[in-house]
Length: 373
Image (cartoon, rainbow, N blue to C red; front, side, top):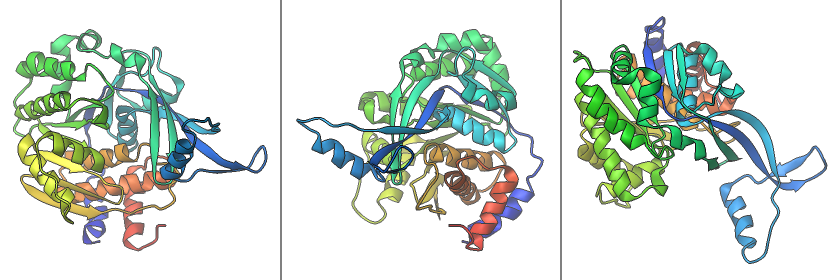
């Protein structure tokens, strides 16, 4: 807990920070849904609490049929980029967003639009039915509009390679999220490398480039290896961070030719070996109960404030990424950045919204004192 105890003072020393970030490129309207187990009356029901319970109910319907009742409990902004951006905006970052928010942006994005420095919406938003369970979530997506997020669309909206370079030169962090669901993201990265990199300033301290793949299971191994190769190329102009959840970490390790062990240090070994193959500044992984990263060849780990009965889990990983990226952008050490990440997600799952800077300081202090559930 020593790292948690030290965090509030480190954050207070950074209050009043001035950070400029650019995030993209997705955008979803998420409908958070409970799946009914038993209904008592029109207003009252119990829900299926775990993915395993839901899976068992689905399996029993094989060869027969079944009826499931979905209860919408919330409609909210979704997508890795918007949720990450929303959390960063709560922390007071000056942020420009580029993505698929709708034309005009869908009302769920309006609070984000109002707080952002600038917003460039390239096309209609994707749609997601997020089935929430106590042990995770099932994201049922409709992605047809995302084919319009292309390199040409980015250049048209942002003033060509020169306009993009000007924006990037003025930021401390640049993030392009949700590679899996954006069919032309790799081409966008190639366009950045070929057309924008030559226009970027060389700085004493490189800005951060942050990437979140968003569950690459449905993409081919060849696609994933190509994406990893492109991400590695960003290291020439940025301090590159790749953020993964635990399942993604094992998938990327496997695709990169890392031999996975069944030992207690399975995750650490996979993360260290994958980091060496990527050759980037940082690889960060956020399992449900903890978080770890490798920076400069050193491995860092922290437990998290696990919540057995979360109010909301959709977006928890993005909130972790927001906290970690903010910590790195503020110059915090890797362990403090990890701790800020787990505090951000820990607050989020308990309150169903992202914390302010003062709220995350208060949360860390309460966690230190053992005063959170």
